[in-house]
Length: 268
Length: 372
Image 1 (cartoon, rainbow over the protein chains, first blue to last red):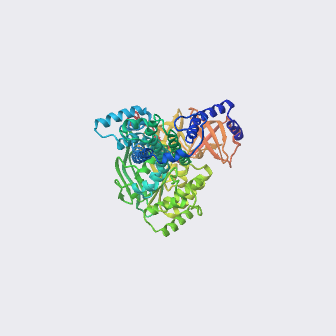
Image 2 (image 1 turned 60 degrees about the vertical axis):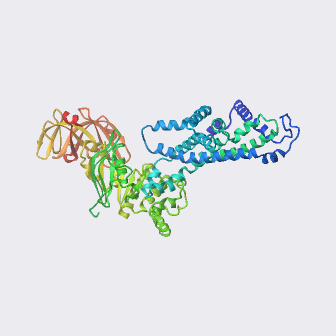
Image 3 (image 1 turned 135 degrees about the vertical axis):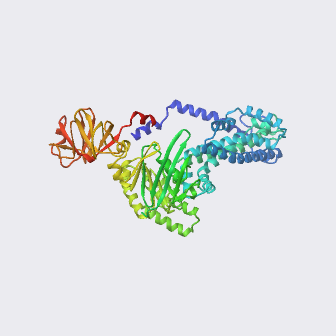
């Protein structure tokens, strides 16, 4: 019976396999092209095949101050938005999981909304709200904008982990003489640790490449995605953008891959 | 037993929203007792345990542990430990770390912890497992770790919430005896929640039978089984035959119950029974015998026809129908049959049992039903 089940699960029909291959190519061929043109010798136009290959653009990119500024700003924003999300998202998940209070479902829904809403709506809403409050647009308004959706990611991850862990471990800890602080330190934190790490990495990655909401809240600041977008209109040194793009792909792929591994490992 | 009360619930009521989980219950559990809370799911037994542990606070009434009112003292300051239904072991800790957890919270020296954890694992017959993770253990082994983790703290009272529920039958039976022996050895008061009446009868010094947030009867297994206080208790604990009728005569200690015209059974009197009252007469299947001739004085005698004979291994169950249509079960050990049971099918037989093996329960009058 077991081998039968294995056989039926072992091979997908040819058409399905071809379709899967097609989707994968569609998704990843453009990425390969980005990689390829990071090494082209052509400065202004991307012609196929590239006239020659060179590592020069990596050197040029490293010496461009605007690249560094945008990169550092994006990293700082992502870091702070993620930290805020870790604290607030965990607190929100704890409250929603632990206690039944009036409006709990509504709060849960409101927390999830920023992720579901189109970025453009969040962006306009944030812009008018911040504008009305007379708060200067800049670093902190970017962080606020990013935190709205970073919180959701952490909240979701932690809440899912709470639901899977159940309440009995917390009760067991209290029963064995641990006060609430000790229970958090020795039982809750280890239980949600990987969920926090995964949620944090995902939040970081989301913040790092966010452009829509950022456009509305950045003021004169230029995050990396905004910088890249602005480079499209400039004809000179185009492969520098590709070099940065390659860097971003690597930087975001690693944490997402790790986050995936971590959450799956935690479910065993 | 030293006589004092380890735990006392005094007029405890617990209401969750619209649901009354416990309705003004009072219990006294003696020092060193193996005390079971027995009842169907939703009867309030687990709520009682959680009130003692401190996970819930009573809506009204008082929980006392060792004579001290617990008030709003949180679980981590109560001298009790719990073995949870699903064990609730910490998955990220080894067996040693799990068992040591409570001791570490008390800031006991590392050396003492190692020794006490070793002793606790020895006690539950699980030595050498210190470095394993809960995931690597079988259900029975996890159960023992949960037990060691609670007992190592030497609580005044150990609370057990259906701890054997997840184990298979054979292991459960073995663990029942082991738990009972362990309790004798450590001398700690055990409060044991279960819905399994056989388990409660096997292990307990005393049992409280609960239903719908009420304590219906508290007594030794013998008292509960032989002298059930209510019809529910008689029906829930073991198997029982319930025969409806009406009291037609009372002769000092014995009431006479008429089932149908001319068919009468006798049972010991109970307070409140009067002539004309509708009652239910209960008798255990194993107390009834098939008789060749009318029994001596002091026995009930009734005729019935056999419609099914079920072989159960150690016993045989015979299902019979009275003339009034009531179905009775008779259970006989498979040793001393006058006739081969399967030959009885479709036969009319005489059933006899001692008068004192019957119990009487008053049917509620319409007025009382209105109150309930």
